[in-house]
Length: 323
Image (cartoon, rainbow, N blue to C red; front, side):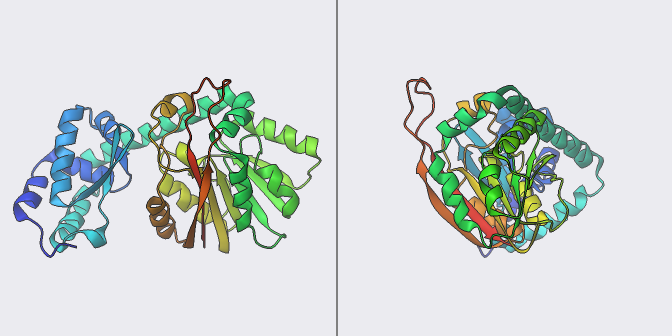
């Protein structure tokens, strides 16, 4: 942490209403430049200039994902002391401010559009999802996730269960298996698959990963396989998973490591182009989880003629934290 902030840069950062609006937005969510352009009704160049001013003053951190840039509030422990105090003042100004409330309403509308995009995609591709999934992530990664299972008399939840790919492999190993998905078509297919396998300890529930239809501490473990990259806000989704596990329970996530395949946003409804270990460690700590463990996955299968060479050689991971 720097001993002192530059007073000129800090004063400049706080001297414009648009920059205050950006700070109020980024206090709640990490957002892309495109998200902020949409919410503020501004231009990309103008928003980028404001963000750069805030970043130079020490208020923001940023990262690049493919051709997109994402910004978030800097960790307060890493801020110069003067910037941290200024941040608290800015946050207090935003409480009850009409402009801040209007911007946050637009933010939640934008997040809901992302959820709707995900629901439409899975509604349209439910029948093909098993094939798509197998091309993105090899079967070995699912098997690796089972390493985090502890004693067999568990109640587990599979978030974003889809057709029940993970759920139906876990169900024979546990007392009760609950699948959650935001696509009723996916749930219908999962029920059909469960019936065909003769499993009687499987339950399917309709709901979103950032508002799970589960009670606090209802399950011993939560699994989320290839679903976090569809979350509007991955940190909030992990916090919600942590909420529903009992003390001592685990949250296990299977997903893709950071990549640059922008086309997957449009064609596969991905909101995030994979994740880095540092992101998962930070989010699980905020969610009240500990003992975070990152397990390196394998590369996805080479593109086949059937896929027209579309899917690249992506690398996956397994991550879990304990409550």
